[in-house]
Length: 366
Image 1: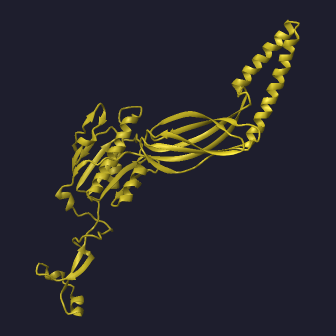
Image 2: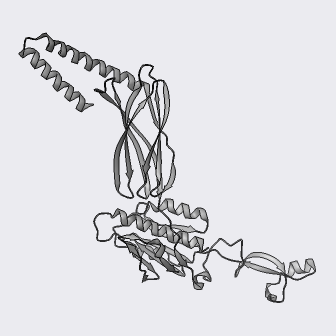
Image 3: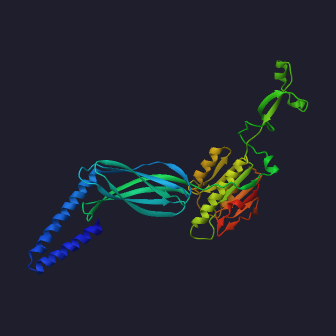
């Protein structure tokens, strides 16, 4: 608007100078025509601005990285005179990935109509993305003058990291590891005498100590108790968020770290290995722990991964030890923001091709 107004004023001044320098009526006519057109176009844009209703649909949803995000905008043109040309301005911001992007799209909205415009945007980075419809530009009949309709309508989209199934093997040591937990399995028995899994008929292989004497006396037959199996976390995935020597965030490396966390968690879940993913949240000033024992926990974890940020303090090891004091795990997988992976303090070789992880070649033993 300012730029176009400035250009129009420059033309108006030039026409005025020509009118005073030369004794020609035509320059005077042009001077009057320009003044009338400027005022008429400005008033026309103001009227059309009131007749144009624009609304960004606030659909909060999640997509996987590199999928398309459908931005939906409902535009209604109440004008009975013209088809209105409009330019919509958008701003995309992902704080986790540290990137911003601005773009615009042009549309013609027919008179007395309502349209739903869908604009596909590729989600390249994980994390919480905020999409803002900042303003709309409305033109006059000749597209020479315009006026802006200011807005700040927003929608939020969670971009999830891609999760790959890895060649991950769970050792017998981890399978048999007994971890404290309040939750018990509803599918198999275990050794927790505080919880009864089921009562069944006695067989020769059963111990006399497991006989349910009260029920046996009542039923006039021998019954034994199968005890519950605790569903404790045998594996810990610790995300070491300590900031390295690099000053700027490596966006590509950060995405790969998030995908590594999601992939290991998904692969452990597929192996029916209950685990905990933890990292330090500097805003909450605490260690966030996410226990994964069910399918929905995997997706809840992926929604949270975009909040992981680097920590600049030098006391992260002490914070970790304090958060897990008294807890034990069969296997501890440590993943740093630099992409380094340690399994029980032993570094794992992550195969890469041109800086990109070769997921088909990644293998772990936990």
